Structures are given as C-alpha cells and as structure tokens.
Amino acid sequence: MRERLILKNISFLVGAQVFNLIGRQLVFFLLARYLGVVGFGKLSLALGITDLFSIMADFGLGIIVTREVAADKERAARYIANTMVLKVALASISAMLIVLFINISPYPRDIRLLVYIFIPTIFFNAMSGPFVYIFRAYEDMRQESKISMATNFFYVSLGLSAIYFKADIFLFAIITTICSLVGLSLAAAIYQAKYRVFERKLDTTLVRGLLKAAFPVGIGIILFMAANRIDVILLSLLKGIKDVGLYAASYRLISVLLFLPYVLATSIFPAISQWSKQGKTQDMRRLAQGLLKAVMIIAIPAAMFVSLHSSRIIELIYGESFLKSADALRIAVWYLAISFPAFIFTHILLLSRAKQFTYFNLIGLVASVIFNLLLIPPLGIAGVAVSAVINISVLTLLCYRQVRVDLFRLDFKEILLLPLLASAAMVVLAFFSGGQTLLELSVYSALLYCALLYLIRGVNQADLQYLITIIKSRGVQDAR
Image 1 (cartoon, rainbow, N blue to C red):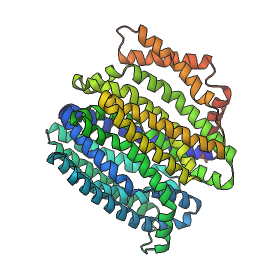
Image 2: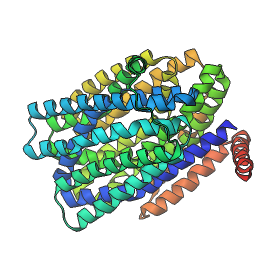
Image 3: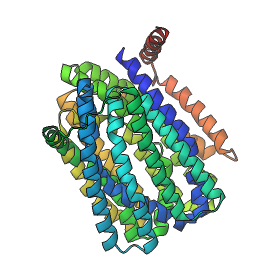
Image 4: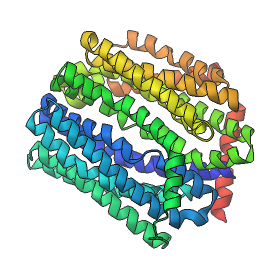
C-alpha cells in the first residue's frame, strides 16, 4: 500500500528531526543566553545573509531530479554526476554575490567575517544535495535521516563544548561549517555503499535539459526563499542588530519546526508525481485531505497555546533579556501552522504549473518587501512577524485556488474550522488560569481541546479506520 510507504518515510524523517530538535535547540537556547541579544543578533544576521544568497545553489534541482529519477531509477547515475556539476557552478555564483553584497553593505567587520566563515557551507550543502535527491527518489528517507542525525550529533557535541570553554562567536560559525562538511562526507559514503553507481561523464545535453526544466521551479523557489529571508536584512537596516537578535530568538522556536511541513511535502512528492502522470486525481485528493486534516488537528491548537503563553515561553527558555521577543513569537507561530497546507499545495502545483508557482512567489516577494518596509518602523519585530504570516497566507490561497481549478477541491470545514472551534476554548482557559505552570496549562489545554474536538466530531470513525488500515498494512508488510 502506497500510504504505508509514505507513512514509513515520514516516520523516519520526523524521528530524526525530533532527535535533532532536542539537541540543536538546547545549543541555540544556551547560545542565546551565552552571547546575549546583540551577539546572538550578529550570528543570526550573518546566517541570514548567507541563507538569502545560498538559495540559488539549489535552483529547483531537488524537485526536478527527485521527480525524474522516481519515474525512471535507471537514470540515477547520470543525474547525480551532472547535477553535482550544476550545483557547484550555482554555489560559486551564490558565493560571489555574497562577497559583492557584504562589501557594499554598511555592516561592521565582525559580521562580514562571520559571513565569510559561513560561505563554504554553501558548497558543502550544494554537493551533498544530489545524493539526498537520489535517496528521496528511491523513497529511502532512512538514509537522509541517518545523515541528519549524525550531522546534528556533531553540531551539538561541538557546540556544547564551545559554550563550556567560553569560545568566541567566530568559533560557533566555524562549527556550523565543519558540520556541513560532515554531512557531505556521510551522504557520499552512504550513496557509494548502497548504490555503487556514479557516472563521471559530463552530459551537456542533460545539463541543459536540467537547467531548462528547473528554471521556472528554481526561480520560484528563489523568490519564495528570498521572501522569507529578506526580512532579517531589512530589520537590521531599519532597526539594528539588537532587534535582529530579539526576532531571531522568537523565529528560532518556529524555524526548527518548519521541518514538519517540509517532511510532509517531501515524503508525498514521489507518490503524487507518479499519480499525476497516471491521472489518479482522487488518490492525490484523498492523501492531501487525510494528511492535512491530521496535521492541522495538532498544528492549530499548538499555535493557539504558544500564542496565548508566548511571554512565559520566552522567559523560560531565553530569560528576561529576551522578553520583547514574545510579541513576534505570538504572531509568527501562525506562520508555522499555515506552512503545512502551503508546502503541500506548492509541491502539487510544481507538477504541472511551475510557471504559476514562480508567478505566485514573485507576488509574495514584492508583498514581503512592501509589508516589511511599512510595518517594521512602527511595529519593530512584531511587524516582521505580521508580514511573514500575511505572505504565507497569500501564497497558500493562490496555490490552492490553482489546485482547485486544475485537480480537486478539499473540505476545509474538517481541515480548519473544527480544530479552530475546539482551540478557541484555550482562550477561556488562559483567561481564568491562575498560578498554574506551563506544564499544567499544556495538559489542561490538551485535555479540553481533545474533549471538544470529539464532541463536535472533529475526528470521525472514517479517519480512525483510515489510520488503522495503514497501520495494519504496515504490520503485514513488516511481518513479511
């Protein structure tokens, strides 16, 4: 059963990311306390600048290679070698753009040095990408999970050691670069051990074909990532490094969980690619409806809880010096919730409407710049969060409208309305709560939410039967 394999891949990636989340978040929480608001802002800004330009190194090749190799596994050897050449060339362009930008920008010397230290990560991540694309095409997400877990183990070990020995900010940047090299080494070693196929011949026809196929997708992804990265740069220019540190603290709590919609979309992409070519629209609809309903039942109440108790969460994790971050966290958490349908709809749109995907993301980038310029001066970091939520909402609506016209319609009463109604009770609970701890409030909120969701039939017998069918199918397959 195809759903069983998708569920298995999701479990591998989620399991790895949960393992990574615990350790990596611990390092970032301690690092924020150790460096302070300004130091953490400098490191976050340098990473933001690097991320903004490094998006060119992918250029949509991940989507194209995964789609093509999933349809014909015999092409894996040709694709990995030629994709590697393209990725290195694109990474070189990204690096040159970074050097140009950082030298004409008004940033001080220490931020420039941090950016230079991060530049090699662009090449290491670009070169590890083709190996990961093949793993995804074979729907073998376990290999990607191994790489992620091992890399983060190195990061956590080195990061905690650096904090313990009171290292300076530059060593933390070096640690990030070293870990990206570790990821590349592991990806190459696993690919060589598992597939033992690597064609060293440069196929210029294939390279041109990849560029042509990836161009609309790549431009769209660049525009999407730029819309989500440019806010930090605008914030630094309009408000300063301290505000970057405050916003980075709140966004860090959200960004580490963005792997969830990414994992969801990545895991279903090979399946929906084949179903799209076979004309199995109802299978695509059933999968999208079921997964979105399941994740939004969790994402909406989680976002509501964080939004209501953002100040206490920030103080508990970062301390009083970061309390101003709560305003941004209260809003930005809804960006995470909306990202689930956004990632799924964009991946479906990429199958047949890549140009529309690019056009929608161009609208998003223009809107991001306009809203940030309008909202940052009066609202500060809260304005950045508002802009982010508006942009992801607009992109989601545009993409779903196209999916509805071309393919299928979803039932949003089940996906959004019922979880929102059940979550509204948390507002009442938060209003009447007294001296309860965050742990107590989370337990009470979860119990109240589940009870109300059951009463309004937010989960029905068909949903449970669908999950039981998948689990039984997996059990039979594993027994074989």
